[in-house]
Length: 306
Image 1 (spheres, rainbow, N blue to C red):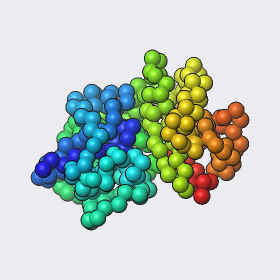
Image 2 (cartoon, helix red, strand yellow):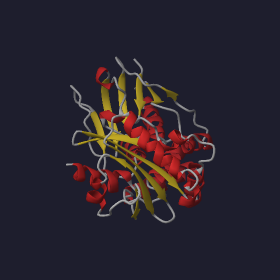
Image 3 (tube, rainbow, N blue to C red):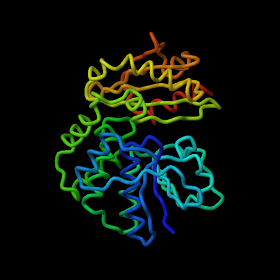
Image 4 (tube, one colour):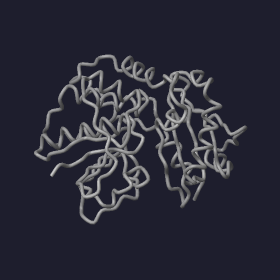
């Protein structure tokens, strides 16, 4: 029976690359696994797979009656709608433990690091399996993406060590240049539909019973988004209403200035001031030094909504 490996909805590079890396590892260990995604790849993920000659996984959204491994998430809101009808065999993640539950014991590797591929790099070593050059390349890129070239508050020494080890296998010597090449692809917005930009790296969360969406666009220079910022603000308001959400927040992260402008659509904007100590003006607020949704935004909002 084939086992499917996938990450969260609106897949980012870590979700895609971690699924491919875990499927490869499990296949080497004699478990027939196939990596899939819950949606189309974003430009950065396409660039990464093309650069290292790795095939794009198929899109799959229904898993009833299937055996599965989850990567890069353990929240039901980010999982397939019929996950409850699948058998979860394991989870590899670097976020807080979510609300996914299982009737049976599962294999879990959930570490406080900046990227799921950092966990996977250690799994390969622990299990005595060599990492192929192409897989090492995409895992390296996932780490550079998730840690914002090691600038994010989520980045740990483990991430840097894993990246160095993977770079040697992949034959990459200038990680800063590779990271900037990726982020330039990530920064391209011209001709992209506004909703696609909003959902490029977007997740829904359950915060004290309220549905809250948080998206993030990372660019090398915030001015790249000047021409679409008003449209982004309008679209997150529409997204909020469409999904019956309490709030939708969109982080526009400038990786060179190391901070984020947050666009806000909320039933109660005071949660932003509660979370960050700064009052929004005109549905926006600048958050200096804030680059990580996982470590600097979600926990603050969870406290504010509690």
